[in-house]
Image (cartoon, rainbow, N blue to C red):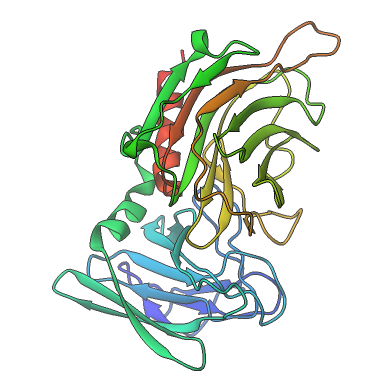
Length: 343
């Protein structure tokens, strides 16, 4: 419980519903609004399992929210910890879409019960797995970037290996990225692209990247209006798709997928919306075990998208490959920049 900048009292609740809940009091705590799930700026509800949803008010008048970004009902799956930045708008707190804050390498280790230390512009977050108590320095530029998510509209160029426009992305084209020290993907990678869809039939190849060691990354259309990624290292295969219903026929979409080798997590963003499962599934992201740390993207094949009936072929209109998993905030900025340039 704490006071907003406008004097309203705010309360965040832990629940067993798969969502946290928030209440407001405008009369000093005498009466409260009914508890409701907090929402991102785009109106999608935040998810949290049976774990501590912790909110902090910072000295700059903005907010931070620790939670676990899935709709489980149990005590399980508290790894990783996610964070959103909050600002006051029309007397309420609106939240940025989620970013990974902290993670354990062993996915079954749980962390919770955090607190924030803020001093002279620096931040530390404490947490415990009920065996060890730990304190983590959090880079202030990381938090500032999260708070910037409400306005960011620039394309991230850091970690960008190559970008291709529509003329280079014809079906069956082979794109080659020379191997050198700049093109290592040890931390993971991001594929950010714009696509005009025709038919939504699943299994249409968008692109396939093959390294010299034979490891592959494939993007294709998934079921129920989604995009699917398939990772294969010759021994293991991981598949994951964006939230259903976000990809529409005969429309252009901005899609990004990040593969983060640190926490071992895959995420999708479609038209600036981070997949969180919404009402369709518990998770919008997934853990993966497939080892793709030494993939090299030395050859990328552009697929051919089909169309039934209307005679319109789907096609890629832009493609960027990054040798790092970008923050969701950065990819939202990429999307906004694309939107601003549309006629």
